[in-house]
Length: 256
Image 1 (cartoon, rainbow, N blue to C red):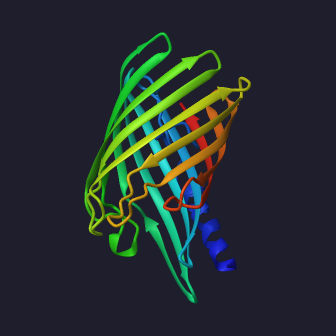
Image 2 (tube, one colour):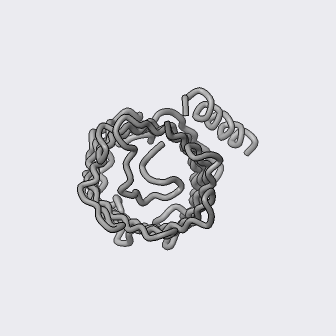
């Protein structure tokens, strides 16, 4: 066990210090919002996540680190690059297997297509490149793509975000290739510096012999140290058996 935590510390050292400084959404949320950076503006995020799952006497622990760089090509249009690192530890009885390395890289465009009176809509196409080693469980082994519809509503200190997505899950593991995602997230600004957020979602199970789709609930907090630098924390928990039992999330965001 001590060796496992040394691996965690080592991976976070790589992610937080060797990489320069992740935007799918306002971390720790999984649901994205329609917000863009604005023309010529950048955002860098470093996010970390620890997953724990136990099923049929098999314990799986995963540590993920993600560096994401977002750039405003135009006022309503961002391009987003995401570079992930992953460490897996699987314990089955007395047998323990470990793998670490880069996972699959994602490139996305987010285009806010309409907005008025606090309501806005965006679309987000993406491509997932097989940069992870599929033989070691670090990637799918094939190029995949996705398309998400995003809506956001903001009023005073409250906002609500909704995502509906399709993922073409090309892979070498005989998993389902056509996946869907649905989720929503309310956010409330407690103060100028503190936001609290929640997230509920579900995705199509990629395992062909499973009829139950994994669902989650998440709670989190975002604290703005400055106008352009945030730190966040989150806890994600399973709503049913196929979902990972729980996840701990942490992130840093810098806008410039």
